Length: 310
Image (cartoon, rainbow, N blue to C red; front, side):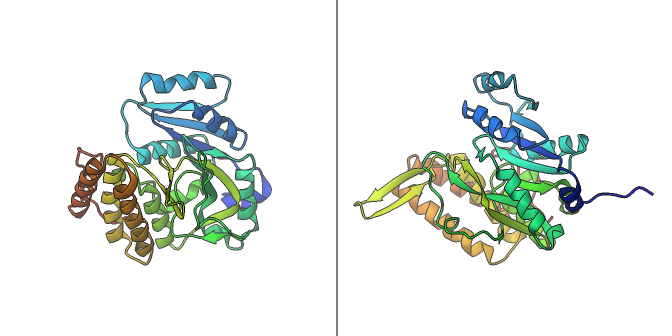
């Protein structure tokens, strides 16, 4: 009789088999640092490129001596589809875990090890769906107030951003893969909230850290007395953020919405106070709100299927 081995048993008996998945879209030279920082921490590495322009793909030539595989999509299919391609690749290679990464995320040298140490030490670890590191902005060094001052214990969260997530591959068999109709933004919220809806845990590992470019983060000061950061997202990002959050408010109604609304209000105020292209961003927000209320999903400008429950 053949016995199956769970991810929990694997972390105790044999080294975990981890597939790193990096999604790229017009990557810059910093992708080289991203790949080199993570390659030694995973078993295999895949880059899924969403139809980057020729100039953007030149960086792959600088990775000629690095062991990785690449999927080149003929068009931008969105982050969720690219991640799901990575999941299929990981299954094809018989891997047990996946580590999802953005093209601008540089992991500290022991990030994965620290997450696995936390996983092994956790009571009831079979209920953990997602482990995530603490992230700071690479350009400014900024660490959000919510992430500063954490202790050493795992922190249960409603959601974490996708980059840096360590997930047992078996979890996707239980709750499904990433929702491709979202295209980009709130893909992470949806997956994490779905995991929690199914009785699983999403945890932050305070000892694990990674640097990440959070939008185009800029620091502002008012009369030298009060300072804050603005994200400076492109107009199309505001479209997806406003549309997809409305879909999720209906899908997972709960107390997490209050926190998200506080963030959204702060984001809106900053757009009108200090950011450029206010009118373009306003139009994108309005359009995203309308499409969200009408359950229109898919890529912007190409309405897809209507939203439903998962």
